[in-house]
Length: 97
Image (cartoon, one colour):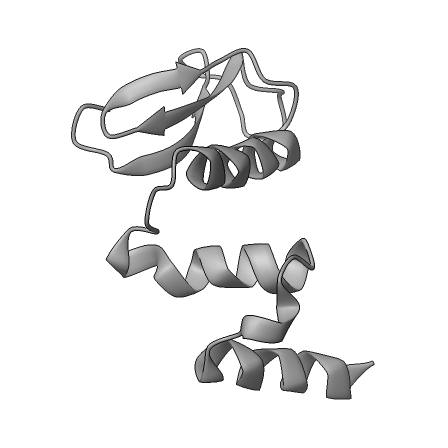
């Protein structure tokens, strides 16, 4: 965990299958667990975006577009400022409907 820039982590008991709910869901920022015992991955992702905003953090470079899609397409926040790459994906998704 110390090497992670940002992550939503699930702690599972050894031998537990993926169909079982995790023992704990938490958020790690710069190697420090900042939140734990969250109720779901969805709430953890929303809280991670909130923490990024409140702490004025930049998205990690390798995950920049992933976070932008999560923020602008999934959560529909600040949609008028999409990068061309994300705008292209959004257009493709809209054409599928």
